Image (cartoon, rainbow, N blue to C red; front, side):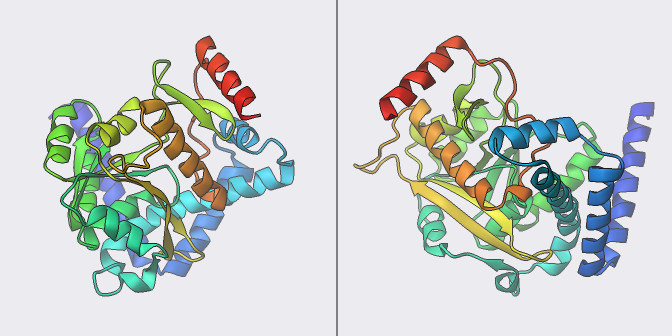
Amino acid sequence: MTLRNVLDYAAYLALRLAIAVVQALPPRACERIAELLATVFTSVAPVRRKVLGENLRIAFPNIDARTEQQVAWNMWRHLFLMVMEIAHTPRKVHRTNWRQRCDIPDVEAIIRTMYTTRPSVVISAHYGNFELGGYLMGMFGFPTHTVARTLDNRYIDRFVNEFRGRTGQHMLPKHGSGEQIEELLASGGALTLLGDQYAGRKGCWVPFFGRPASTHKAVALFSLGFQAPTMVVGVRRKRRMLEYEIDVANVVDPAAPEFAFAGVQPMTEWYTDCLERLIRRGPEQYWWIHRRWKGEVPEKVLKRLKRKERTAA
């Protein structure tokens, strides 16, 4: 066994020990610990303060220092709670009690999109507890396939994917899974994707909180290429730990006569706008610590967006 394997296995054991400790704690204790850690990461030893502040000022240009600090604290609290919720979910959320944990105001839209022989695409973001979203979909009886990056630590990667697949969520690697995705959609399967990931200079640049952001073209191509009904959702924590609401921002059907988003650009703009509206409902539950607005925006993109602004005006 190589040194790398030894270190990876040690990290895996440490993670399992931490999860065992968290599982032994009552929810209220988890909340208090998350609040303490949020204070440490915000005020005592600030983590990614510069990135966090820059992102918040891009999204909310008029934000004041006090509000920025409050959103940052609540974001860290949310992230730590999310990790603890993942540890508790297999023991506390079951087919018999999920209704006590989760509200779905627009359940009809979810059933109409997922309960079909046609392929479907579900788009979310680094918002709320998106890991719980895939877990719940499987519990509802809608198995999904999710594209995610393979973790460097193979022991932790296998452990995380075992949690994800516990109720019927299947994982596909981020790189090299194109053929599997095509087979899935061709057979009428359901694909879930994160729609707020940076796609490099050659991505599809669309406005996100008023600033151009590079977005993967494949997300729109899957929906358009397979004429798949597409739903944008967010799993937002309501108040306490493991109390959530599944927000459906919107649903479109590329096969419908009135479909208005033909083409990668308009489709990407549509779902990005939906994600933005979800995030505005609970900005403290978005991952402001990841660089959504990276890279230099190509000149032709800036010109196109300016022309669009003038036309809209």
